[in-house]
Picture 1 (cartoon, rainbow, N blue to C red):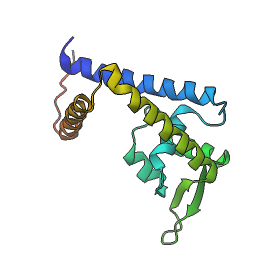
Picture 2: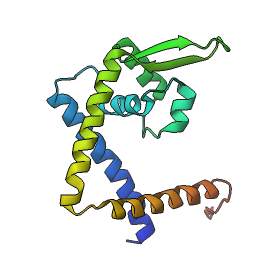
Picture 3: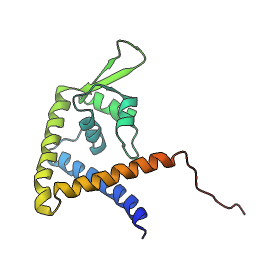
Picture 4: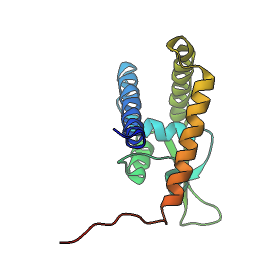
Length: 155
């Protein structure tokens, strides 16, 4: 397998595996009214107040309808939504008290994972190097959006 194609497959598999970890942790904590993708969205909101559009641009929620997930989190008390003072068409969301409590728990989970990284052979320098490669790949893909390149022979 070419290293480029292997990287693409690894990125997707790792994202799905991380979502599986979140799912298991939510179930262990008996939190059944929010799913793994929603918890990731919630954590990415953090202390900010965002529109659904800003949230969509900020994160990449594979196979996810962000509007639907935000609606469910509002219904289940994790988010509060308010109309923008400046633009009545725009709705902003922020974490409720319940949402902040879950966000704090997720932050603690990530800290526990970080503590286990080095003993697993994943030093910060290796992660920083990997992150730079991923940022470079992200920039490369951004450049490819307008480049065109796929040619399929019809016949």
